[in-house]
Length: 157
Image 1 (cartoon, rainbow, N blue to C red):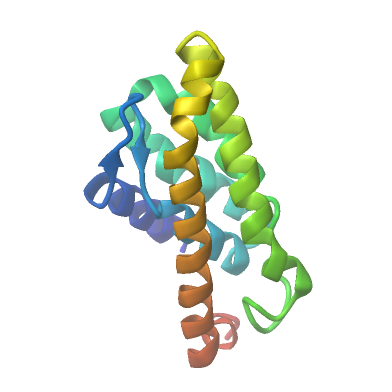
Image 2: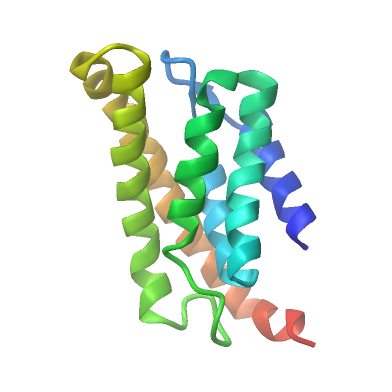
């Protein structure tokens, strides 16, 4: 299942992303990282979070690879795979917002490092906020649908 999530995340970012003007992209693959982190046991969720977007970076925008393989697992660590439902815990209810804030803050810093200063970080903020907000909303939609279908119970068989 980890390989499936790596592939889904990679493909969603590769085919459904918009360039942000700073060598990166706006995408909603983070919502799939969040789902993976709620369905897979702890270390696997982190691996998926690093490799799915990391492979995209290697294929399209390698300058972001070292940042991505550190930032995305930190985001995934906000979630838990424990429980019968994805949204069945308080932790998973607040985790997407915390993960989006982490993403925005750390990529803000990465933009400043890569592109020499505060103006680059500030210029990247609109795209980071759009990506974070969209990922949170898509996560809640996907998680509610998966919970309604009883996916966690099915996967635990």
